[in-house]
Image (cartoon, rainbow, N blue to C red; front, side, top):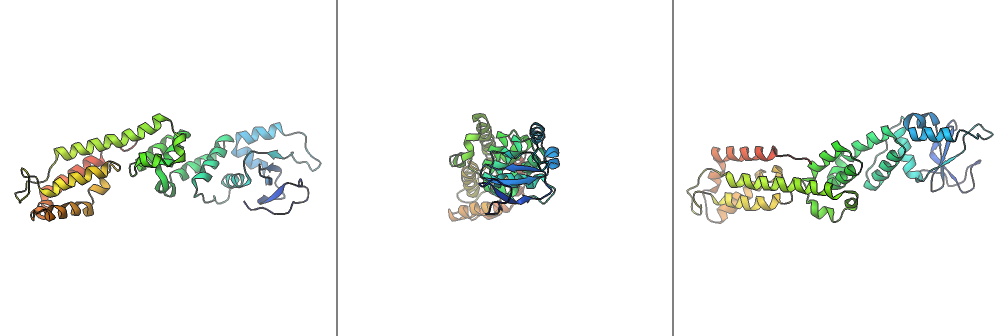
Length: 288
């Protein structure tokens, strides 16, 4: 929060003037909970918030000797008010990179019915910087405010993480109802079970190499073992069907004594079955 350290003339001795919102032609004065004064254009507040509109109607009298409404004391800090008003004004939006700041701004927008600000904050909640940092936190916040579209998108990104492990270290867990968390866990478990079933009913082309069991190549046995462990926390196709992951399984088959594993893996029949199974995994429901 940019502010002058000296008290400005006309302000109470313990009130400091914001340097972000200090326009002399602004006609409405807001005091933050931590002792800053923000001069705001009332027309912008009225157009952006029905709550502020009602506040101004109630505070319309008395007016001081300069024709201004009396200051309005709010419970929020100057930093949060400053950021919130930047979103409200027709100026570039501030960069928000902290979950804690985003949560405070969402509370502000919800409390004062700042619809335009809330719309922007919803987009920020599911922006890459937040989803990649913690999709579970984004999901929890979306659940708290009943943001259905954002909740679905965040739940899809939660498939990339160990929900149970992250939930244990996430403060946002307290925001979620048990139903919201169970829906997320059920999504992961349903996909995991389906992928295991796909692997049980799909197989590569038969292999006659040493070590093959009833025609099942060693690399496929290794693949199923490793894939089951991977999808336990990440029930997605993006890892288990990557060339690197598959190559590790083939190399393990060769190391265990089957020189036919590479040829079996590279055969057109095996590649077609892998593509088919990947498509089946991709087609599974991926949101709550």
